[in-house]
Image 1 (tube, rainbow, N blue to C red):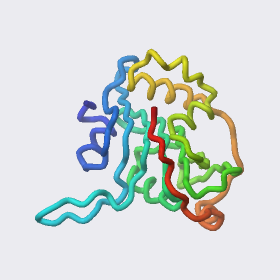
Image 2: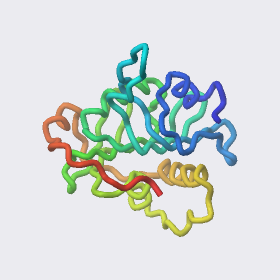
Image 3: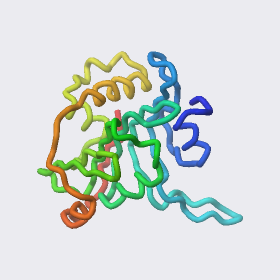
Length: 194
């Protein structure tokens, strides 16, 4: 489990970390925590009898964070429009120095963008019948065989370490322009992360 002062612990205490596969401290970098799972962006209704699942969420999340900020995050979004609400939920935990990747279901498969929301830059990419984990391995040119002997948290850390060195640039568009070029939502990818 994460340290109580960590960004991930704050999100966890808000009930935003759901379906966690990894939620633990790094064994290599003191003060860093790693996460793999989903983030509730908009909560479902809560009644006396039941708590509904989130109305809106970021899925297949890979994340590395310390006490102040999220240094790396990769997410699957069913629709590009979820990017702004996600950024609002994470707020000051996102920084200008962080590396953030959003794989969107309704972005043209041939397009890649950079979208600035406040001081934060997001790499916005399409996803096609794959998982965020596999897409990140391909984007960062990480050989899957190199990760075979690693624990689940070590795999997240390996991707985060490589992502923090990512220097490629894509055409910059505004969030409003992104809303204009997004396509219809397709069926979500069936595969879950390896």
